[in-house]
Image (tube, rainbow, N blue to C red; front, side, top):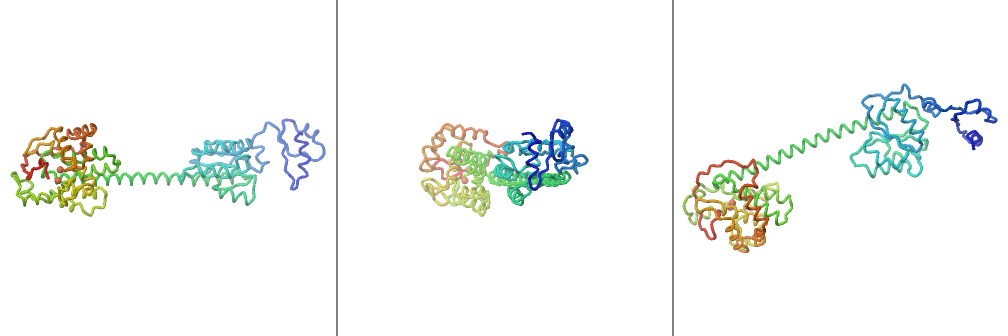
Length: 444
Ligand SMILES: [Fe+2]
Ligand SMILES: [Fe+2]
C-alpha cells in the first residue's frame, strides 16, 4: 500500500490525523496520483530538519540558544526508539549550542551509557522496554549519590503517563509536539540543578577530606603523646632508651602469630610501650638505687604496676584502656605467683600475657648494669623452661616457631623500630640492682 492509499482511511479518523507526506517525487506527480480531496502537506526529499520541525509542532531551532555557555559541554543522552526523533533532537540541540550529545534507539543500552551523562532525554513509549522501565532500571543500578536528571519527552499526554514517569524518577515532563524554547529552557533548568549538585558534591568531598586529614592529624598527635608518655617513664629507667618501643613491636609480633586481627595488633603495638609508665611514681632512691633493694623498697618497686594502671585509668580510647590493663597485669604469672593481684592463667588479660613474654625477651637480651645480655637462644630456652609457670604456655610456644624467632631477633636488632622514634639517649649508667632475682632478674 502506498502512502497515498494509506491516507484515505486515515482521513476518516476522529479526531482527524494530521498527515505529512515525505517523498522524493515532485508535487505535481503526487497530485496526479493523489485522487480526490486536498493534498496533504508535502516535504520533498532531501529536506532540512528546520523545514519539517514546524510541521511537528516544533519551532525552528535557529535562534534558540542555550542560556549559559557553561553548559555547552554538558553531556546529553537521547533515548528514543524512533531514529528520526533521535536525529531531530540531536540537530536541535546542536543548533542550540550543545556539543556533547549521544543518541540511542535501543533503551537497553542506557545502562551502559548513563554514568557519564549530565542529562537524559527519554521517550516514554518504546517497544520491549518503555521509558518507565528504563527509569526503574536506572533507579536499581545507579549509585545512591548519583544525580542524573531525566526529561521525559513523549506524545502520551495522559495524566497517568505523567504520574508514572515522575513516580519512576523523571525530573521533568514535556509532551509532543513541543516548543523548542520550552524544551531548551527545561534542559537549562535541569542542567543548572545537575551542575549545582556536582558543585555541592565536590565541596562535600573537599570538606570530608579536610575532616579526615584533621582526624589523622589528631590521631597521630594523640599517639605521639602516648609515645612521649612512655618515653618519660623509660628515660628514668632504661639506659638503652628503646626497650619500651621494642616491647610494643615484640608484643604485636606475638599477637600477629597468635592470629589476632590487624586492629587489635595495632592497639597492642601502641599500648604495650606504656607497660612501665607507673615507674614515674617510683622515687629515684628506689628506682635508681645501685645496690640491692630492701623488702620494703621491693614492695615500692612492685607498686609501679598498680600505679601505671591508676595513671592510665578512666581513659576513653581503646588504646588507653588496653594500656591500663597491660600496665596493671604485665607482672602477673601464669601460675599465680606474680603481682599485683596474683592472677593466674586466663584470668590474666591476653594483652598482658603477650607483653610479659615480649618484656622478658627484650630485657634478658639487653645489657644491664647488674648482668650482661643473654644470647637470644638462652632467652628462648628460658621462656620454654618457664612455659606454664611464668608464661602462658601457648604464647611461650609461639616462640618455638621459626618466623617468631626471626621476628623477635629482627626487633631486637632494631629492624622493627620506627625511624622517628630512633633517638640518642644518654647511656650514662643508671646503676640498679634488683632483688630478689629468682628467676633471673628482668626488671620489674
Ligand atoms: Fe619492661
Ligand atoms: Fe614492669
